[in-house]
Every structure is written in structure tokens, then in C-alpha cells.
Amino acid sequence: MSAPDLLGSSPADIVRYTYPVEPAPADAATATARRDRIRAALPTYTAMRQDIADAYAQQDWRALGHPSWHAYVTLEFGELLAALPTVERREAVADLRSQGMSTRQIAGATGVDAKTVRNDLSQVGTSSPPEAEPAKVTGADGKSYPAARPTPAPKPTADPLPPEVAAQIQQRIEEREAEAQKDAEIAKLDASLDAAMEGTATRFRANWGAMAAKAIQILTFDRKRLVEVYAADYDTEIETFLHGLERFIDEVREERRRQTSGLRVITGGAR
Image (cartoon, rainbow, N blue to C red):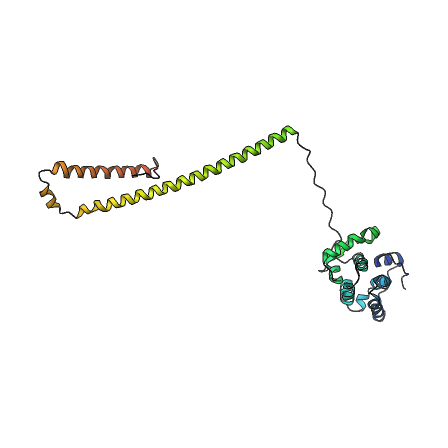
């Protein structure tokens, strides 16, 4: 049983409105002859839409050993579909879509990218009856997916703020920006002071090291000779020096105890 010529409708529509019952699958001879006719006439796609409708309705892909309609179209007619003029390619794209092929599958079969397929569908979409668009398409993985993604609900728009409220918000924003700028300047100053203090501490350590190196040399003097030489002036010179040194050592130790106990922290100083 052959479907009558209903050009202007997609093959899926021809099948839907022509066959009162589902037609029997085609045998290999019928499917082969129909495939050859389609190949010969595909440069003018419109002329072969009837044969394509029959091939889809009678599942020619099964008779020719293809796993699916998508594989049948791609392998048997892919090169010819890729050479179609734009107008006829759009008709082919719309037909393949109505037969349940996904955008990626159509792109592979017609030799164009997915964006072109979507553009083609938008160009011919208004001329197709509502029922021509399938509820689901079959992806390359063999699974069914919705033919189109649901349109997201528009986001609610907020009512405009009263002018005085908007002005207050803007003022607060400017105040926060000014505060942030001030904080940045303070942080920059702190970093500069820290660097200066570090430099001061470095100089202090250098001066102390030099003086300590000189002071340590007194340990090389002969103690007996020192007492003999300063016998007359021992109390006024040697004892005064030793007492001063002992007091300095005691004060340093006390300061160390205070700092380590958390009572006072000294970060640096100048000599």
C-alpha cells in the first residue's frame, strides 16, 4: 500500500494521516528499490518526500540491516543531504525532526552543525502543524528525550524603589566605598611602619653586636694583673664597671621575664 502524494506535509504527517493501520514492514527488495529512487532524486528533496514517507512508515532500515532510522538516513543519504540547497535542506531537517531525530542526529545526517539545524527548524517551524513536532526524540545513545527543553518561567521583577530609599542606599554604598578606601590606606601605612620598625631593629642588632664583640675582649685580660695595676683605684674604676655591668645584666633578664610573661611586648627600638 503506497501513501498518496501529500507534499507540503512532513513524512511523519503523511504516515499519520494516510495509513488507517500501521503498514507492514517492507521486504528487502522493496526497501532497496525505494532507497535507489531516493538517492537518484535527492538533489531535489521535495520530489522524494513521498518515498521517504513510505520508507519511514514501512521501516525500510530494518529490511536493509540498519539499527535505526537515524542510521539508515545517515549512511544511505548523508552525502546527498549535505549537498542540498538551503531551502530543501530546511525541509529535510524539519522532516527528520518530525520523525523523532535529535538535533545532533540531524546535524550528523545533513552534514551541518547543530546551530544550523536549530536555525533551520526556527525558519520552517511556523509552517508545520502543531502535531508535527514530536513529544520526544531519540538521542545518539538510543534514549528518548523531550523534543524541546521547557521554557523557564520568567523571573519576577522587583518594583522600583522610592527615590528617597534609592538615595539612601546609594549614600550607604558610597560611605562603604570610602571606608574601604580608608582601611586600605591605613593598611598600607601599617605595612610601611612595620617595614621601618624592622629596619630599626636590624640596625639596633648590628650596633649591639659590634659593642658586644668589643666588650667580650675584656675576658682576655689577665685577672691578677688587672687587680695589681688598679690596686689603688680598684673601688673607683673596676668595681664601678663591674657593678654597672651586673646591673645591666639583671635589668635585661628582668625585661626578658616581663616580655615572656605577656606583661609587655617591645617590637623594636633605637639605640
